[in-house]
Image (cartoon, rainbow, N blue to C red; front, side, top):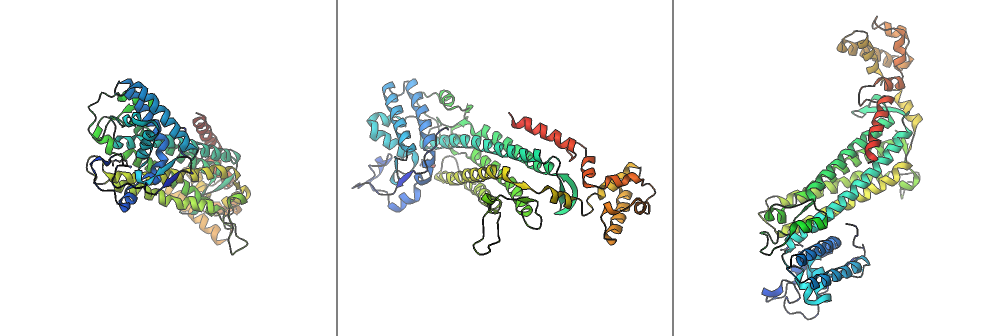
Length: 480
Ligand code: ARG
């Protein structure tokens, strides 16, 4: 979908003048009473589904072309319909279209307006179509566009993270387990871990897109149609890879939307993990990173404060995205075949998920290149807390000692250093020899954080060599 409805969309809830019954409703024929105001208010969806307007028009245009091509409606009427719809699209884009609550949803608003503008030709558009297959189509078109958009934004963010990683191929920092300093790593390695997560997220979005990209139109209300339509033509017109197999399934299933929300939920989970680290790292206690002023906010009472509200909000917004997923799953649970009005509840969670991801990714794409990592501080902290003890144990393994024994011996050395108030690097060869005769003076070379990093040269490890390989692989993927 190229065009989007303007934000300034106007929706009015004023009742039309002097209507005694439902003659103003496209489905009003069998009704003798005017719909109650409370029911109109309760059942309307146009206040939010107006966001599907451009998809609705795109779908209607393809449908009309097909109807003309099949000789189901006159070609002259097709031209009128296309022109009328184009006019409506341009009015919507300019914020000049007034959506009416009494007309319930985006579909009936557009169709009613079309008939108003072009007369009876407009009344032929809904031939061989129901709002049930129409709304399923609109949502699929919408989500196809949005998932492409979000994949693009994710890629942008990955590129920004990669750029920071490239700047920090030499920055040694402490790696953590249990929030305790564990083993030194390269900051680039740490950052690229997030790129791996986001790569999988992109794969998931692309995979969900395959199931989004199926044409439901032509399913009619639920059983198909007696008219000789050409669904493959419509699919081709709208860029769908295939047409749905079962009309009952395609008007009632929303698992494509649920899958999208799940993929989105994981994007947010990953963003929130990264956000949590930025909040911690930006604290005085860590001081590993500083957020640019433009991306932080102040306190209304404490003049000294510079708060990491952006990552905090990103972390917080995960809740609503998970909530949207749970809401949608719950709406679908136990729905009998086929279309039920419950399905109208699918839209707000989907829209909110799209908006939340868009907003969060955009601010991260903006902010990430402006983060300043404090390399000296990270290196200093990495060299403390005995984080090279595993290297000492692996040194002993290299000299033939079974790992369990080496672990024990090294543990004793650490305890000795702790008692003496020293770091491992402060110990001499004599201290080591007290615990094992296998030590040689070269053990002192494996005590620095940098030596430790570079010794971890196993595939996917944190050595400079391995991280450079990772970087090359990921850059190749991102350049596609
Ligand atoms: N606004 C409706 C929805 O979002 C459109 C389909 C209505 N179909 C119907 N038969 N009432 O699901």
